[in-house]
Image (cartoon, rainbow, N blue to C red):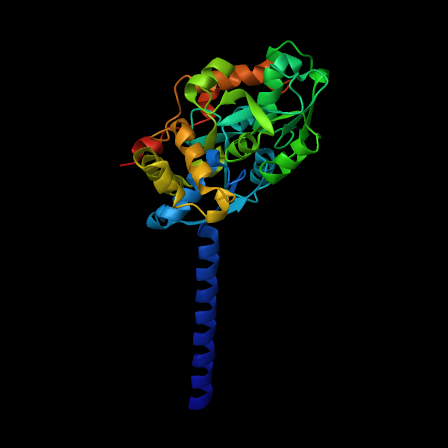
Length: 337
């Protein structure tokens, strides 16, 4: 009798341990935050990988997984499908999605300039301004991406009609360069370190530069808040503690960028991000790191510029009532000690 009771207790205890272990695993899985980055080797999205490298997520007790996706529009789709909790991508998606009835918001604003450049192939010296895009094929990271938004805006501002240009998705890095080398695109929008690679080889030159706040104002008519951490508003409202911890980690990262040299920052990044040219990577970062905000706060005049840009060419946004106050929040970044 005693042995059967002992066996019962052993089995029961074992079952409890298994259940506890399962519950612990489930809780751990539920606590994991997955963030998709629209190309984490791009310098515009550097804060994502840098925060991970510096250990700031772990310092906040967060289990964050970064996933890589070449085009911001694909990352946006993953967010809306519930596959990821956050996206490191351009703020303009928050405005575009509200026009479609979806509410997402920038939780931490990484940059106040796009960090993008319209490059022209050396094979096409006839392209001297966006007005010369007519009849050309232009490279963007993805259709519906921020590079596509900005390309269509420049064409529209230059007086071109929607059918005058063709935009094709060619990604970034090696795929962008190959498309230009093969004349699949005559011009295209890309970021560092791809810009520097093309200039170094003489295969392309800069037509429109949006790597600094000043040049962005000239090109777009105002400050253009770009790279950000954006999340669904419903998720943020239901996970205030996690949202604050994410803000803490990213604001600390932006402070690090603001107080360290490009060489010091580069040393924290994976070596394959240099694409075989660390000196070129450092120079590009040194020239462009002024685009990052020092505190994660949305530039006051930025959302209006983004809305004006999207309204210029987008049928989704033009004429729609957009509540810009619901496209970003400063609640969490302003709480960071």
